[in-house]
Every structure is written in structure tokens, then in C-alpha cells.
Image (cartoon, rainbow, N blue to C red; front, side):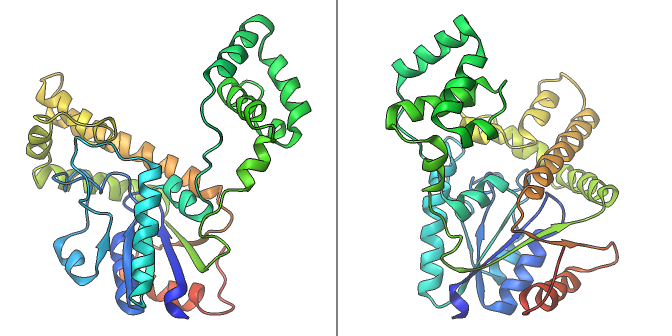
Length: 313
């Protein structure tokens, strides 16, 4: 049944996801579930680049403007709210279209959250004491004996993950790798179509720069000034633009330097997003050519990805 299909349209910031997702949602009678860690916050429209009122009026959106900036927001809250939204959309006999740039949130929906075991502080303290006394190699050897699969995937210098894996092995008497496999998400339970959009790096960076310039023209400085009058949560404080504009408002540097920092940090963020998405083998990539409009991209996806036999690299 069509409404049992779940579509993901993901990709780096400024690639053009929003308009493409809106067009597809209109064509497929879908509702959009935002997969963005920052658009959940009210009163931060410019810095988070929320969809325009036109787009929000054309297609029903979920998980936008649902938290105050004083509140924290994490993957557990996202999973709960996103799954609830998807169930409600399907109950209305519509298709759920998930779109955004958070690779972590995407993976949580696909595969579920690995809760692990409750924190065992005494076990953790003992393991850290062993690291100090014997070195990380001792933990590697123990993990190899208890859970060879996990030992192969964790770098021997990643002491934090070694400690957590062994803490779970000791506390549950089960291999860490086995418990991770027991988590369950949407993957395998629905007809899934996962699409990642990308552009040539120079073009993507140019779009990022243009977006930042427009943010300042649209009143970003005043938006952040109002925001900084409130006690921001740790999560809200990580919105790109908050610290960069704060430095300008504090007269640490001028507005031109704030623009430079925002462009730089947004480019770095896009690079991290692409690194995450490229590790996900289930994604079907669509490279957007410069001359393609959002309509062209949506049509390409419908013709080459949704249709049986359609292939993307």
C-alpha cells in the first residue's frame, strides 16, 4: 500500500532538500517529518533556515517549532516524536517523507537507538583505573576475549568506547556487538526509499555563502540578539550563528568577520554531514547538476529512483 512507504530525502545543508521534498510530498500525497536537530526550536527561524511559510502552507510538516530554546532536545526525544508522527501520517492513509541533514537522526529512525546497559559507575571506575595502571592494551585484550566482533570495530586508542563496551559486557554478561544488533528501527518493516542529494563541492560552498549573506540581510543579527537574552539550552546554543553573531555583538570582531565564521563553520558542517551519509550504503545518491531546478530533481527522483529498476549510484 502506498501509505506504508517511507521516503527519506537527506543531504548536506544548502543542497536544496527543502524545495525538492516539498514538491515530492505534493506529488505523492505525503506529509513531511523534519529530520533536523535545530528546526525544532521556536523563535529561531533565520539561523535554522526553516522552510518558508509558503512551503509550510503547501505541505504539512512535523517536528518544526516544537521546543523552546531553553529546552534540551536529544536523539531519544526525536525518535519518539518522529515515530509518533509517522504513525499518525500513515493512519491518515498518507506517505511519510522524512527530510533533513542529520545523519544521526536518520540512522536512529532506520535502526533504532542502542540503549546499551544502565551506567555502572563502579565498573567504569575500575576499568579507567586499569587503563591508568596497565594501559589501554589491557582493555583491548579483555574485549577481544569477551567480544571479538566489537574489538575489531573499536580503535585500540579509543579508550572511552573500549571502557563503555567492556562496562556493558561485564554488566549484562552479553557481547556488546550482540546487544547492538538487537535494536530495531524502521528498516525491514516498511517499503523504504532512501535518497541523498549532493552537488559539486564548489557549487555547494557557493550556495552556503549565498545563504549566509541572505541570513544577515534578513535580520540574523537581531534574531540572535533576542535569543541571547534567554537562557539557551546546550542544544540550542549549538545552532550555527549563535556563537558567531554573539562575538560580533560582544564587539570581539565586526559583522564581516561574523559572516566569514558562519560561512566557514557551515562548510565544515556540510563536510561532516557528507562524511556521515557516505558511510550509509542504503542511500541512493542523486548528483544535482547546476542547471537543474527543484522540479527537475524531483522528476529525476520519481523517474529513476521510485520506479522499479531505477538505478542510482
